[in-house]
Length: 577
Ligand SMILES: [Zn+2]
Image 1 (cartoon, rainbow, N blue to C red):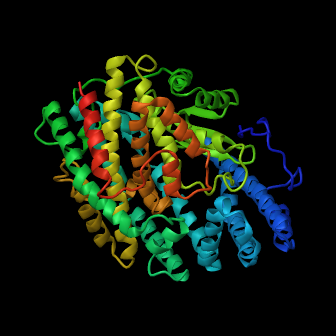
Image 2 (cartoon, rainbow, N blue to C red):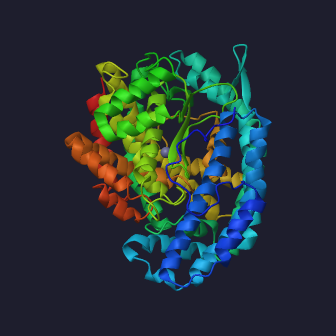
Protein backbone atom coordinates (compact mmCIF):
# COMPACT_ATOMS: atom_id res chain seq x y z
CA UNK A 1 0.00 0.00 0.00
CA UNK A 2 1.51 3.38 -0.90
CA UNK A 3 1.93 5.91 1.87
CA UNK A 4 -1.27 7.91 1.75
CA UNK A 5 -0.31 11.50 2.35
CA UNK A 6 -3.43 12.94 0.73
CA UNK A 7 -5.20 12.27 4.03
CA UNK A 8 -2.88 14.71 5.84
CA UNK A 9 -4.11 18.23 6.59
CA UNK A 10 -2.79 20.81 4.13
CA UNK A 11 -2.51 23.68 6.58
CA UNK A 12 -0.35 25.79 4.29
CA UNK A 13 -2.21 26.66 1.13
CA UNK A 14 -0.34 27.08 -2.12
CA UNK A 15 -0.10 30.66 -3.28
CA UNK A 16 1.95 30.11 -6.38
CA UNK A 17 1.85 26.56 -7.74
CA UNK A 18 -1.27 25.34 -9.54
CA UNK A 19 -3.46 22.96 -7.50
CA UNK A 20 -2.40 20.05 -9.66
CA UNK A 21 1.25 19.64 -10.59
CA UNK A 22 2.50 16.27 -11.74
CA UNK A 23 5.90 15.16 -10.52
CA UNK A 24 7.21 14.76 -14.04
CA UNK A 25 9.47 16.85 -16.22
CA UNK A 26 6.79 18.42 -18.48
CA UNK A 27 5.05 19.95 -15.45
CA UNK A 28 8.16 20.77 -13.44
CA UNK A 29 9.96 22.41 -16.33
CA UNK A 30 7.05 24.85 -16.75
CA UNK A 31 7.60 26.08 -13.20
CA UNK A 32 11.37 26.35 -13.69
CA UNK A 33 10.83 28.29 -16.93
CA UNK A 34 8.45 30.72 -15.24
CA UNK A 35 10.77 31.31 -12.27
CA UNK A 36 13.90 31.76 -14.34
CA UNK A 37 12.19 33.98 -16.92
CA UNK A 38 10.29 36.22 -14.52
CA UNK A 39 11.68 39.76 -14.40
CA UNK A 40 12.62 40.98 -10.94
CA UNK A 41 12.49 44.78 -10.81
CA UNK A 42 12.17 45.59 -7.13
CA UNK A 43 12.93 44.31 -3.66
CA UNK A 44 9.28 43.30 -3.26
CA UNK A 45 9.46 41.28 -6.46
CA UNK A 46 12.63 39.64 -5.19
CA UNK A 47 10.92 38.63 -1.95
CA UNK A 48 7.92 37.32 -3.87
CA UNK A 49 10.22 35.31 -6.13
CA UNK A 50 12.00 33.77 -3.14
CA UNK A 51 8.70 32.77 -1.54
CA UNK A 52 7.48 31.20 -4.77
CA UNK A 53 10.71 29.34 -5.22
CA UNK A 54 10.52 28.08 -1.63
CA UNK A 55 6.97 26.83 -2.22
CA UNK A 56 8.21 24.97 -5.27
CA UNK A 57 11.18 23.56 -3.30
CA UNK A 58 8.83 22.27 -0.63
CA UNK A 59 6.75 20.55 -3.28
CA UNK A 60 9.82 18.95 -4.88
CA UNK A 61 11.24 17.78 -1.58
CA UNK A 62 7.93 16.35 -0.43
CA UNK A 63 7.37 14.43 -3.66
CA UNK A 64 10.85 12.98 -3.40
CA UNK A 65 10.24 12.08 0.24
CA UNK A 66 6.96 10.30 -0.46
CA UNK A 67 8.74 8.14 -3.02
CA UNK A 68 11.56 7.49 -0.58
CA UNK A 69 9.12 6.52 2.19
CA UNK A 70 7.26 4.14 -0.12
CA UNK A 71 10.44 2.47 -1.31
CA UNK A 72 11.70 1.89 2.27
CA UNK A 73 8.34 0.70 3.63
CA UNK A 74 8.10 -1.92 0.94
CA UNK A 75 11.42 -2.79 -0.64
CA UNK A 76 9.73 -5.81 -2.26
CA UNK A 77 7.31 -3.69 -4.28
CA UNK A 78 9.03 -3.14 -7.66
CA UNK A 79 6.71 -0.26 -8.49
CA UNK A 80 7.97 1.75 -5.51
CA UNK A 81 11.59 0.93 -6.27
CA UNK A 82 11.08 2.01 -9.87
CA UNK A 83 9.39 5.27 -8.86
CA UNK A 84 12.29 6.23 -6.60
CA UNK A 85 14.92 5.21 -9.14
CA UNK A 86 13.07 7.12 -11.82
CA UNK A 87 13.47 10.16 -9.60
CA UNK A 88 17.22 9.73 -8.93
CA UNK A 89 18.01 8.64 -12.49
CA UNK A 90 15.95 11.05 -14.56
CA UNK A 91 14.32 13.81 -12.57
CA UNK A 92 16.98 14.71 -10.03
CA UNK A 93 19.71 15.55 -12.57
CA UNK A 94 17.27 17.78 -14.49
CA UNK A 95 16.12 19.45 -11.29
CA UNK A 96 19.74 20.18 -10.32
CA UNK A 97 20.53 21.77 -13.67
CA UNK A 98 17.36 23.86 -13.72
CA UNK A 99 17.93 24.80 -10.07
CA UNK A 100 21.33 26.14 -10.99
CA UNK A 101 19.71 28.55 -13.46
CA UNK A 102 17.64 29.93 -10.56
CA UNK A 103 20.75 30.26 -8.41
CA UNK A 104 22.50 32.20 -11.16
CA UNK A 105 19.52 34.49 -11.53
CA UNK A 106 19.61 35.19 -7.79
CA UNK A 107 23.36 35.78 -7.80
CA UNK A 108 23.16 38.20 -10.74
CA UNK A 109 20.50 40.34 -9.10
CA UNK A 110 21.33 43.39 -6.98
CA UNK A 111 18.25 43.02 -4.79
CA UNK A 112 19.42 40.19 -2.48
CA UNK A 113 21.92 42.60 -0.88
CA UNK A 114 18.96 44.79 0.15
CA UNK A 115 17.10 41.97 1.93
CA UNK A 116 17.08 42.31 5.75
CA UNK A 117 20.50 40.99 6.74
CA UNK A 118 19.52 39.71 10.18
CA UNK A 119 17.17 37.28 8.51
CA UNK A 120 18.55 36.58 5.04
CA UNK A 121 22.32 36.82 5.42
CA UNK A 122 22.99 33.10 5.84
CA UNK A 123 20.60 32.11 3.08
CA UNK A 124 22.41 34.49 0.73
CA UNK A 125 25.79 33.14 1.76
CA UNK A 126 24.66 29.57 1.02
CA UNK A 127 23.41 30.56 -2.42
CA UNK A 128 26.54 32.49 -3.35
CA UNK A 129 28.71 29.59 -2.31
CA UNK A 130 26.56 27.07 -4.22
CA UNK A 131 26.82 29.15 -7.40
CA UNK A 132 30.58 29.30 -7.09
CA UNK A 133 31.13 25.55 -6.89
CA UNK A 134 28.39 24.32 -9.23
CA UNK A 135 29.67 22.52 -12.34
CA UNK A 136 27.33 21.07 -14.94
CA UNK A 137 29.64 18.11 -15.54
CA UNK A 138 29.40 17.15 -11.86
CA UNK A 139 25.69 16.41 -12.20
CA UNK A 140 26.51 13.38 -14.32
CA UNK A 141 29.26 12.30 -11.90
CA UNK A 142 26.82 12.58 -9.00
CA UNK A 143 24.33 10.43 -10.90
CA UNK A 144 26.95 7.74 -11.39
CA UNK A 145 27.87 8.01 -7.71
CA UNK A 146 24.23 7.54 -6.73
CA UNK A 147 24.04 4.44 -8.95
CA UNK A 148 27.08 2.97 -7.24
CA UNK A 149 25.48 3.78 -3.92
CA UNK A 150 22.44 1.72 -4.89
CA UNK A 151 24.71 -1.17 -5.91
CA UNK A 152 26.32 -0.95 -2.47
CA UNK A 153 22.90 -1.04 -0.80
CA UNK A 154 21.84 -4.04 -2.84
CA UNK A 155 25.10 -5.89 -2.10
CA UNK A 156 24.79 -5.34 1.65
CA UNK A 157 21.02 -5.97 1.59
CA UNK A 158 21.48 -9.32 -0.15
CA UNK A 159 23.82 -10.61 2.57
CA UNK A 160 22.22 -13.38 4.55
CA UNK A 161 23.59 -16.27 6.58
CA UNK A 162 22.17 -19.58 7.60
CA UNK A 163 22.25 -19.75 11.37
CA UNK A 164 20.61 -22.59 13.29
CA UNK A 165 18.64 -23.76 10.33
CA UNK A 166 17.27 -20.34 9.46
CA UNK A 167 18.20 -17.85 6.77
CA UNK A 168 18.83 -14.49 8.45
CA UNK A 169 19.87 -11.00 7.40
CA UNK A 170 22.94 -9.43 9.02
CA UNK A 171 20.63 -7.09 10.90
CA UNK A 172 18.68 -10.04 12.28
CA UNK A 173 21.96 -11.60 13.38
CA UNK A 174 22.91 -8.64 15.56
CA UNK A 175 20.72 -9.80 18.45
CA UNK A 176 22.98 -12.83 18.91
CA UNK A 177 25.86 -10.54 19.91
CA UNK A 178 23.85 -9.87 23.08
CA UNK A 179 23.68 -13.58 23.97
CA UNK A 180 25.19 -14.36 27.37
CA UNK A 181 26.58 -17.64 25.94
CA UNK A 182 29.97 -16.65 24.54
CA UNK A 183 30.11 -19.56 22.08
CA UNK A 184 26.86 -18.48 20.46
CA UNK A 185 28.14 -14.92 20.09
CA UNK A 186 31.39 -16.03 18.55
CA UNK A 187 29.70 -18.41 16.13
CA UNK A 188 27.24 -15.70 15.03
CA UNK A 189 29.99 -13.10 14.67
CA UNK A 190 32.26 -15.36 12.62
CA UNK A 191 29.45 -16.39 10.34
CA UNK A 192 28.45 -12.79 9.59
CA UNK A 193 32.06 -11.76 9.20
CA UNK A 194 32.80 -14.52 6.70
CA UNK A 195 29.72 -13.59 4.69
CA UNK A 196 30.72 -9.92 4.56
CA UNK A 197 34.31 -10.79 3.68
CA UNK A 198 33.17 -12.86 0.71
CA UNK A 199 32.06 -9.59 -0.94
CA UNK A 200 35.04 -7.51 0.18
CA UNK A 201 36.58 -7.33 -3.28
CA UNK A 202 33.31 -6.19 -4.82
CA UNK A 203 32.82 -3.52 -2.14
CA UNK A 204 36.43 -2.40 -2.54
CA UNK A 205 35.87 -1.92 -6.27
CA UNK A 206 32.69 0.08 -5.73
CA UNK A 207 34.47 2.36 -3.27
CA UNK A 208 37.51 2.81 -5.50
CA UNK A 209 35.20 4.01 -8.29
CA UNK A 210 33.39 6.33 -5.91
CA UNK A 211 36.60 7.91 -4.63
CA UNK A 212 37.69 8.51 -8.21
CA UNK A 213 34.38 10.15 -9.15
CA UNK A 214 34.42 12.32 -6.05
CA UNK A 215 38.01 13.40 -6.58
CA UNK A 216 37.11 14.40 -10.10
CA UNK A 217 34.13 16.44 -8.85
CA UNK A 218 36.38 18.36 -6.48
CA UNK A 219 38.89 18.95 -9.26
CA UNK A 220 36.18 20.17 -11.65
CA UNK A 221 35.10 22.73 -9.09
CA UNK A 222 38.67 23.98 -8.75
CA UNK A 223 39.67 22.37 -5.47
CA UNK A 224 42.89 20.50 -4.61
CA UNK A 225 40.92 17.60 -3.25
CA UNK A 226 37.42 16.35 -2.50
CA UNK A 227 37.75 17.14 1.20
CA UNK A 228 38.18 20.85 0.58
CA UNK A 229 35.33 20.78 -1.94
CA UNK A 230 32.90 18.99 0.37
CA UNK A 231 33.52 21.48 3.18
CA UNK A 232 32.21 24.21 0.90
CA UNK A 233 29.45 22.05 -0.57
CA UNK A 234 28.19 21.15 2.90
CA UNK A 235 28.09 24.83 3.93
CA UNK A 236 30.63 24.24 6.68
CA UNK A 237 31.18 27.97 7.19
CA UNK A 238 31.99 27.77 10.90
CA UNK A 239 34.71 25.12 11.09
CA UNK A 240 37.63 23.90 8.98
CA UNK A 241 39.37 20.59 8.21
CA UNK A 242 41.95 21.72 10.76
CA UNK A 243 39.26 21.92 13.46
CA UNK A 244 38.29 18.32 12.64
CA UNK A 245 41.91 17.22 12.97
CA UNK A 246 41.97 18.90 16.37
CA UNK A 247 38.76 17.04 17.28
CA UNK A 248 40.49 13.76 16.42
CA UNK A 249 43.36 14.67 18.74
CA UNK A 250 41.02 15.75 21.51
CA UNK A 251 39.12 12.44 21.27
CA UNK A 252 42.39 10.56 21.40
CA UNK A 253 43.42 12.42 24.54
CA UNK A 254 40.14 12.60 26.46
CA UNK A 255 37.78 9.90 25.24
CA UNK A 256 39.98 7.00 24.17
CA UNK A 257 41.40 6.44 27.69
CA UNK A 258 37.84 6.48 29.06
CA UNK A 259 36.66 4.06 26.39
CA UNK A 260 39.51 1.68 27.25
CA UNK A 261 38.72 1.99 30.94
CA UNK A 262 35.11 0.98 30.21
CA UNK A 263 36.40 -2.02 28.26
CA UNK A 264 38.75 -3.03 31.05
CA UNK A 265 35.85 -3.13 33.51
CA UNK A 266 33.73 -5.03 30.98
CA UNK A 267 36.46 -7.62 30.55
CA UNK A 268 36.75 -8.08 34.30
CA UNK A 269 33.03 -8.44 34.81
CA UNK A 270 32.74 -10.91 31.97
CA UNK A 271 35.58 -12.83 33.60
CA UNK A 272 37.55 -13.28 30.39
CA UNK A 273 41.25 -12.89 29.61
CA UNK A 274 40.83 -11.05 26.41
CA UNK A 275 38.03 -8.96 24.93
CA UNK A 276 37.15 -10.13 21.42
CA UNK A 277 34.93 -8.38 18.84
CA UNK A 278 31.98 -10.59 19.84
CA UNK A 279 32.18 -9.51 23.49
CA UNK A 280 31.25 -5.87 23.02
CA UNK A 281 27.44 -5.93 23.03
CA UNK A 282 26.58 -8.47 25.70
CA UNK A 283 25.62 -7.30 29.18
CA UNK A 284 28.81 -7.47 31.29
CA UNK A 285 26.88 -9.24 34.07
CA UNK A 286 25.39 -11.69 31.58
CA UNK A 287 21.86 -10.50 32.24
CA UNK A 288 19.39 -10.98 29.38
CA UNK A 289 18.91 -7.87 27.20
CA UNK A 290 16.55 -5.18 28.49
CA UNK A 291 13.05 -5.59 27.13
CA UNK A 292 11.16 -2.32 27.56
CA UNK A 293 7.93 -3.02 25.61
CA UNK A 294 5.95 -5.76 23.93
CA UNK A 295 4.80 -4.20 20.66
CA UNK A 296 4.55 -0.88 18.80
CA UNK A 297 1.54 0.16 20.90
CA UNK A 298 3.60 -0.38 24.04
CA UNK A 299 6.48 1.62 22.62
CA UNK A 300 4.16 4.52 21.75
CA UNK A 301 2.43 4.57 25.12
CA UNK A 302 5.78 4.50 26.93
CA UNK A 303 7.12 7.36 24.81
CA UNK A 304 3.96 9.35 25.57
CA UNK A 305 4.47 8.98 29.31
CA UNK A 306 8.11 10.01 29.00
CA UNK A 307 7.35 13.05 26.85
CA UNK A 308 4.50 14.13 29.13
CA UNK A 309 7.16 14.54 31.83
CA UNK A 310 9.57 16.35 29.52
CA UNK A 311 7.27 19.03 28.14
CA UNK A 312 3.56 19.45 27.36
CA UNK A 313 4.10 21.11 23.98
CA UNK A 314 6.58 18.50 22.77
CA UNK A 315 4.28 15.76 23.95
CA UNK A 316 1.47 17.45 21.99
CA UNK A 317 3.58 17.22 18.82
CA UNK A 318 4.09 13.53 19.43
CA UNK A 319 0.35 13.02 20.01
CA UNK A 320 -0.30 14.74 16.71
CA UNK A 321 1.99 12.30 14.91
CA UNK A 322 0.20 9.37 16.52
CA UNK A 323 -3.21 10.78 15.59
CA UNK A 324 -2.14 11.37 11.98
CA UNK A 325 -0.54 7.93 11.69
CA UNK A 326 2.92 9.36 10.94
CA UNK A 327 4.83 6.57 12.68
CA UNK A 328 5.88 3.31 11.06
CA UNK A 329 7.62 1.55 13.92
CA UNK A 330 7.44 -2.19 13.71
CA UNK A 331 9.82 -4.42 11.83
CA UNK A 332 8.21 -6.51 9.10
CA UNK A 333 9.13 -8.46 6.03
CA UNK A 334 10.14 -6.31 3.07
CA UNK A 335 10.82 -3.23 5.19
CA UNK A 336 14.21 -1.55 4.73
CA UNK A 337 16.54 -1.63 7.77
CA UNK A 338 17.35 1.37 9.91
CA UNK A 339 15.43 4.36 11.13
CA UNK A 340 14.86 7.95 10.01
CA UNK A 341 12.71 11.00 10.34
CA UNK A 342 11.77 12.63 7.06
CA UNK A 343 9.94 15.84 6.57
CA UNK A 344 6.90 16.06 4.33
CA UNK A 345 7.78 19.60 3.47
CA UNK A 346 4.64 20.87 1.79
CA UNK A 347 2.27 19.79 4.57
CA UNK A 348 5.17 20.55 6.96
CA UNK A 349 4.75 17.36 8.95
CA UNK A 350 7.31 14.77 10.02
CA UNK A 351 7.27 11.04 9.34
CA UNK A 352 9.16 8.51 11.48
CA UNK A 353 10.36 5.14 10.20
CA UNK A 354 12.11 2.48 12.27
CA UNK A 355 12.36 -1.25 12.91
CA UNK A 356 11.40 -1.84 16.53
CA UNK A 357 12.44 -5.19 17.96
CA UNK A 358 11.53 -4.83 21.66
CA UNK A 359 14.95 -3.58 22.67
CA UNK A 360 16.26 -0.69 24.73
CA UNK A 361 17.84 0.72 21.63
CA UNK A 362 14.40 1.06 20.00
CA UNK A 363 13.22 3.37 22.76
CA UNK A 364 16.27 5.58 22.22
CA UNK A 365 15.71 5.51 18.45
CA UNK A 366 12.08 6.59 18.73
CA UNK A 367 12.98 9.44 21.08
CA UNK A 368 15.88 10.42 18.79
CA UNK A 369 13.67 10.58 15.70
CA UNK A 370 11.00 12.37 17.75
CA UNK A 371 13.59 15.06 18.48
CA UNK A 372 13.98 15.54 14.72
CA UNK A 373 10.22 15.73 14.36
CA UNK A 374 10.05 18.47 17.04
CA UNK A 375 12.37 20.49 14.85
CA UNK A 376 9.89 20.17 11.99
CA UNK A 377 6.96 21.16 14.24
CA UNK A 378 8.76 24.13 15.78
CA UNK A 379 9.71 25.54 12.37
CA UNK A 380 6.30 24.83 10.95
CA UNK A 381 4.66 28.24 11.28
CA UNK A 382 7.70 30.07 9.99
CA UNK A 383 8.31 30.92 6.41
CA UNK A 384 11.54 31.64 4.63
CA UNK A 385 14.37 31.41 5.41
CA UNK A 386 13.70 29.67 8.76
CA UNK A 387 11.80 26.94 7.01
CA UNK A 388 12.88 26.06 3.51
CA UNK A 389 11.87 22.59 2.47
CA UNK A 390 14.01 21.16 5.26
CA UNK A 391 16.91 21.00 2.89
CA UNK A 392 19.10 23.62 4.53
CA UNK A 393 18.79 22.64 8.16
CA UNK A 394 22.40 22.37 9.40
CA UNK A 395 22.88 18.73 10.37
CA UNK A 396 25.33 19.63 13.16
CA UNK A 397 22.37 21.23 14.90
CA UNK A 398 19.58 18.96 13.61
CA UNK A 399 21.33 16.17 15.49
CA UNK A 400 21.39 18.26 18.66
CA UNK A 401 17.59 18.29 18.42
CA UNK A 402 17.45 14.50 18.20
CA UNK A 403 20.35 13.42 20.42
CA UNK A 404 19.19 15.70 23.23
CA UNK A 405 15.85 13.90 23.33
CA UNK A 406 17.59 10.55 23.12
CA UNK A 407 19.70 11.35 26.19
CA UNK A 408 17.39 13.40 28.42
CA UNK A 409 14.45 11.01 27.95
CA UNK A 410 16.48 8.54 30.04
CA UNK A 411 15.78 10.72 33.07
CA UNK A 412 12.19 9.45 32.88
CA UNK A 413 12.53 5.77 32.03
CA UNK A 414 11.98 4.68 35.61
CA UNK A 415 8.23 4.11 36.02
CA UNK A 416 7.57 4.34 32.28
CA UNK A 417 9.58 1.72 30.40
CA UNK A 418 11.50 0.26 33.33
CA UNK A 419 11.83 -0.15 37.02
CA UNK A 420 14.50 1.89 38.76
CA UNK A 421 17.27 -0.68 38.31
CA UNK A 422 16.67 -1.24 34.60
CA UNK A 423 16.40 2.50 33.98
CA UNK A 424 19.87 2.88 35.49
CA UNK A 425 21.13 0.08 33.31
CA UNK A 426 19.68 1.75 30.21
CA UNK A 427 21.30 5.06 31.14
CA UNK A 428 24.61 3.34 31.81
CA UNK A 429 24.49 1.80 28.33
CA UNK A 430 23.61 5.15 26.82
CA UNK A 431 26.59 6.85 28.50
CA UNK A 432 28.94 4.09 27.36
CA UNK A 433 27.38 4.32 23.88
CA UNK A 434 28.16 8.03 23.76
CA UNK A 435 31.78 7.53 24.79
CA UNK A 436 32.09 4.96 22.02
CA UNK A 437 30.27 7.27 19.63
CA UNK A 438 32.87 10.00 20.11
CA UNK A 439 35.66 7.52 19.34
CA UNK A 440 33.81 6.08 16.34
CA UNK A 441 33.10 9.55 14.90
CA UNK A 442 36.80 10.34 15.15
CA UNK A 443 37.67 7.05 13.42
CA UNK A 444 35.20 7.52 10.59
CA UNK A 445 36.09 11.17 10.06
CA UNK A 446 39.88 10.75 10.29
CA UNK A 447 39.75 7.87 7.80
CA UNK A 448 37.84 9.97 5.28
CA UNK A 449 40.31 12.84 5.66
CA UNK A 450 43.01 10.36 4.68
CA UNK A 451 41.04 8.75 1.82
CA UNK A 452 40.19 11.98 0.03
CA UNK A 453 43.55 13.66 0.53
CA UNK A 454 45.26 10.53 -0.89
CA UNK A 455 42.97 9.85 -3.85
CA UNK A 456 45.58 7.80 -5.71
CA UNK A 457 45.80 5.17 -2.98
CA UNK A 458 45.56 1.43 -3.68
CA UNK A 459 43.11 -0.90 -1.96
CA UNK A 460 45.96 -2.30 0.16
CA UNK A 461 47.08 1.16 1.28
CA UNK A 462 43.49 1.96 2.17
CA UNK A 463 43.15 -1.15 4.32
CA UNK A 464 46.38 -0.24 6.08
CA UNK A 465 45.20 3.32 6.66
CA UNK A 466 41.97 1.97 8.13
CA UNK A 467 43.76 -0.33 10.54
CA UNK A 468 46.09 2.50 11.63
CA UNK A 469 43.21 4.92 12.10
CA UNK A 470 41.02 2.50 13.98
CA UNK A 471 43.84 1.42 16.32
CA UNK A 472 44.30 5.05 17.26
CA UNK A 473 40.73 5.29 18.57
CA UNK A 474 39.72 1.71 19.34
CA UNK A 475 38.85 0.08 22.65
CA UNK A 476 40.58 -2.99 24.04
CA UNK A 477 39.10 -5.64 21.74
CA UNK A 478 41.65 -7.94 20.17
CA UNK A 479 41.56 -8.90 16.50
CA UNK A 480 44.34 -11.43 16.81
CA UNK A 481 43.93 -13.98 14.05
CA UNK A 482 41.20 -11.78 12.49
CA UNK A 483 43.48 -9.36 10.64
CA UNK A 484 41.50 -9.54 7.43
CA UNK A 485 38.20 -8.91 9.22
CA UNK A 486 39.70 -5.86 10.81
CA UNK A 487 41.10 -4.51 7.56
CA UNK A 488 37.68 -4.64 5.87
CA UNK A 489 35.52 -3.55 8.80
CA UNK A 490 35.08 -0.10 7.25
CA UNK A 491 33.05 -1.56 4.38
CA UNK A 492 30.06 -2.01 6.64
CA UNK A 493 29.87 1.67 7.53
CA UNK A 494 27.35 2.80 4.94
CA UNK A 495 28.27 6.49 5.30
CA UNK A 496 31.58 5.96 3.50
CA UNK A 497 29.61 4.88 0.46
CA UNK A 498 26.32 6.71 0.63
CA UNK A 499 26.99 10.05 2.33
CA UNK A 500 30.70 10.88 2.13
CA UNK A 501 32.07 13.09 4.90
CA UNK A 502 28.81 13.03 6.78
CA UNK A 503 29.75 11.97 10.31
CA UNK A 504 31.66 14.69 12.13
CA UNK A 505 28.19 16.24 12.52
CA UNK A 506 27.37 13.56 15.11
CA UNK A 507 30.45 14.43 17.15
CA UNK A 508 29.65 18.15 17.10
CA UNK A 509 26.00 17.51 17.91
CA UNK A 510 26.88 15.18 20.76
CA UNK A 511 28.66 18.01 22.54
CA UNK A 512 25.44 20.03 22.21
CA UNK A 513 23.21 17.19 23.39
CA UNK A 514 25.42 16.57 26.42
CA UNK A 515 25.23 20.29 27.16
CA UNK A 516 21.40 20.27 27.01
CA UNK A 517 21.34 17.20 29.24
CA UNK A 518 23.61 18.81 31.87
CA UNK A 519 21.36 21.85 31.86
CA UNK A 520 18.22 19.72 32.03
CA UNK A 521 19.45 18.03 35.18
CA UNK A 522 19.88 21.42 36.84
CA UNK A 523 16.73 23.14 35.59
CA UNK A 524 14.32 21.30 33.31
CA UNK A 525 12.12 24.24 32.32
CA UNK A 526 15.04 26.44 31.50
CA UNK A 527 16.75 23.74 29.39
CA UNK A 528 13.60 22.89 27.40
CA UNK A 529 12.75 26.54 26.72
CA UNK A 530 16.27 27.13 25.35
CA UNK A 531 16.06 23.92 23.31
CA UNK A 532 12.74 24.91 21.75
CA UNK A 533 13.86 28.46 21.11
CA UNK A 534 16.95 27.30 19.23
CA UNK A 535 15.06 24.70 17.19
CA UNK A 536 12.52 27.28 16.09
CA UNK A 537 15.34 29.26 14.43
CA UNK A 538 15.48 26.52 11.81
CA UNK A 539 17.94 27.13 9.02
CA UNK A 540 18.20 30.90 9.42
CA UNK A 541 21.21 31.23 11.73
CA UNK A 542 24.82 30.02 11.65
CA UNK A 543 25.88 27.20 13.96
CA UNK A 544 27.53 29.29 16.69
CA UNK A 545 24.31 31.33 16.97
CA UNK A 546 22.14 28.21 17.14
CA UNK A 547 24.35 26.78 19.87
CA UNK A 548 24.26 30.08 21.75
CA UNK A 549 20.47 30.23 21.47
CA UNK A 550 20.27 26.79 23.09
CA UNK A 551 22.59 28.03 25.88
CA UNK A 552 25.41 25.86 24.57
CA UNK A 553 29.10 26.39 24.12
CA UNK A 554 30.27 26.23 20.50
CA UNK A 555 33.47 24.23 20.06
CA UNK A 556 34.62 20.62 19.85
CA UNK A 557 38.36 20.75 20.33
CA UNK A 558 40.91 20.19 23.07
CA UNK A 559 39.46 22.99 25.19
CA UNK A 560 35.97 21.53 25.24
CA UNK A 561 36.13 17.74 25.03
CA UNK A 562 37.73 17.08 28.44
CA UNK A 563 34.64 18.61 30.08
CA UNK A 564 32.29 16.30 28.18
CA UNK A 565 34.49 13.31 28.96
CA UNK A 566 34.24 14.19 32.66
CA UNK A 567 30.45 14.35 32.47
CA UNK A 568 30.31 10.94 30.83
CA UNK A 569 32.72 9.52 33.40
CA UNK A 570 30.48 10.85 36.18
CA UNK A 571 27.38 9.39 34.51
CA UNK A 572 28.96 5.96 34.32
CA UNK A 573 29.83 6.10 37.98
CA UNK A 574 26.35 7.24 38.88
CA UNK A 575 24.54 4.55 36.87
CA UNK A 576 26.90 1.64 37.53
CA UNK A 577 25.28 -0.93 39.78
ZN1 LIG B 1 19.38 11.78 13.68
